[in-house]
Image (tube, rainbow, N blue to C red; front, side, top):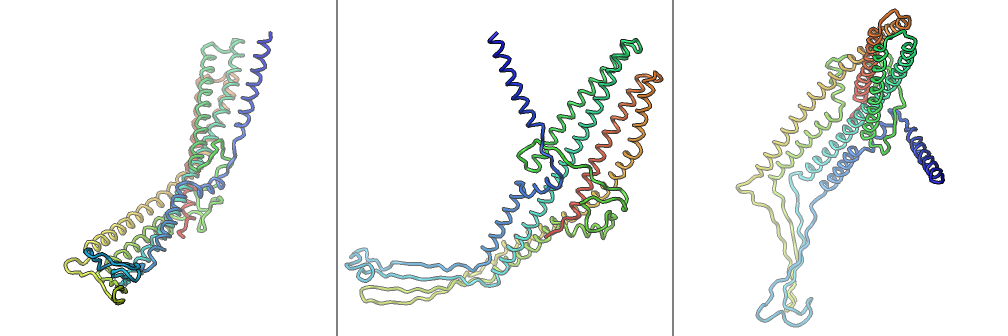
Length: 437
């Protein structure tokens, strides 16, 4: 008895702990799209891009300076046979002591070209960070809509499971009364079990979608859910706009001027143009190397025995006989050609992406409107009529199950259509709002 009582107490405590833990997990953090988009600033990819900006800023400081002077000291005239002699090191020993300063005079505007190349590199790094931030926001927005779609699928599955369980209960009663056969009741129970399995699968999919959003937004807690409805948009230019509406018209026609305007303001395109200018500055710097720098220097020498002091002046410069920095210039030319090719590739990719994105936005909105206004309502009406007819015995179980499966498939298509439309619409608006700094 005592052991049984202790066992019941321990079991009760265990159940209480499990209930407490499950209660803590049953209250996930509700997030809006705006709140998760703000997390993009703290994502590691964006922080790494910000560190690249800081490094490029340091490169500008390092480039915009003149060469540092060089201080040299020497000891000469050391007599290895008779020694250095008595006295102090400063005035007695027989040592020729010298000290000098040398400074490089940069010619050919090397500092200007070097600084300009570094400044353009800093601007390109800033544009890269803007583009990385935008891509991260698009990724986070896509993961957010994936989670919302998973939540809708889970809710639809739970509703279908409840309906299937009610139908199974009704089938058991009718079987007891002899209204239906055992085979028909077994088919109803099989459909109920399938609905239960689908519900478990979609609940797991919703959990995975939450984890994916947490990873995309660099969230510590993955017990989250999307606390926002689907955006309001339309396939027509006069349709309602959501809060991501760009500054221009609601729906821009895919014409060349409109697409070119959006292409020009993209951060990746501006970064590619900036790198072309930086490559030109690097080419100017390589050509400036053909103008020789002169190293000016001077020094003072002192010899203790006769207390003589002498002054030395010197100048040095490279003697460019057989080499005129052709290799450096060829490398700079190749760098400029590569930057121009990358700019052309970026322009083509940006134009193609924006054009296809605009068309995808219009197409997905039209598909969503067709499903929600026509197909979904008709499939719901067909299911309601089939359920009413089956209750009266006016139709077969096969017709009812077909109607339920059709309605289920259409509802899943509607969720997928909302997801596709929301993804395309949000990406288009983020791209439209993104302006290169």
